[in-house]
Amino acid sequence: MNRDTVLFLDFHPDGEGSVRKLAGIRRFARTQGWRVDAVRPDESRAAQVGPLLERRRPVGCIVERASWDELLPPALFGSVPVVYLDPPDPDAPGLARVVSVVCDNEAVARMAFRELFAGMPPCLAAVPSPGLPRWNLVRIATFRALCEEAGIECRTFDGIANEDREKRISRLARWLALLPKRTGVFGANDNAARDVVAAAMRVPRHIPKELAVVGVDGAGEGSFPVSVTSVKLDLELAGYQAARALAERLSGRRGGRPAGPPPSFGPLLVLRRRSTQGPGRQEPLILEAVDVIRREAGEGLTAAALAARFPVSRKHFERRFREAMGHSVLDEILHVRLGMALDMLSQSHVPIGTIADFCGFGTQRGLRKLFRARFGTSMEAWREAHGLS
Image 1: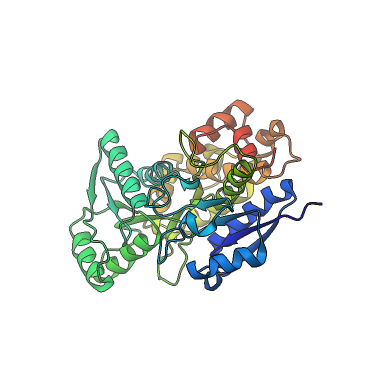
Image 2 (image 1 turned 30 degrees about the vertical axis):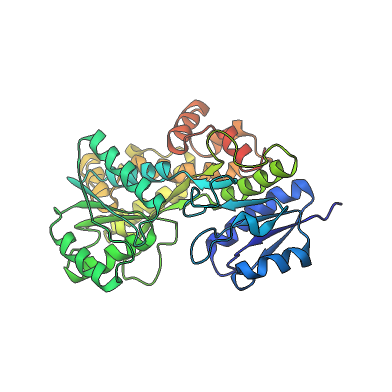
């Protein structure tokens, strides 16, 4: 077998995101017979790149960091093909003519909007990430446009680049105090969402009773008293796309940045946590209902059948469920079913035609329609994009 080596620079072994990207890179690498070596940050400095290439002699490199503390410009790699994986600004000087795999930030904002809007709040709000990078501006602008399209008020916190965190939290607390009760707040990433939680505790504004909060990145548990609901990014697809783009460069199909949109990845799903649950989150009735959904969603469970198990009217049950969870019973059932479908879809031996029945969808057509609406692509295209076809 060809053991050509590919280097994945700036790999953080303790970071879930880096680990998931590496898994995607290695999945594609297996199709090429590549060996993938992950290079830690302390070995990925600009001054070390030349000696590293001389010592390892890779066929290509994938660079996760492109312009945080230190830019690793393409010139450092000489004739070795390089692909940049999710750089903060793919159009930064030195990167404008090379291949980068980028995040679909508009799709991220759409998923966050749907999650917050499902709770029918009278107002929505957006909080930018602390550093105000370019991707942040796209997420905020898209979220505001969706609010305008839906006819709902949207307020935006005025971010200041490189602001002292204590000053930012103090300003944010004063801003949160002026929001209407039952406002849904979108943090452009999990850092922004955590700042909202920290600021809300000072006012105080109760989360989730008064403020529902959604972040982005999928790492919202943290050590805060309130765990943060978060849009989880498809980082394995990001790694897979980067490796595939590198293979195209090696085959001569891409000498530099091609015309048209760059390869991209988007949101995978919403990790629902306490920050979007309503005031009834501790109700035994609701907790039992959620447990039933987790166990029986794939067995054709309906909202009406679930409500019939409890000694209240269906209307009363569904109202209490929405108040507690921030979304409807049906949305929770579909959320669980789609999670099951993704799990099955990631197993290449499972025929797509069998997934609908197994996950509790009445028809294959219904699953396909919902899948495209939630993920913006067909099931076949999703499987192919993840290298599982």
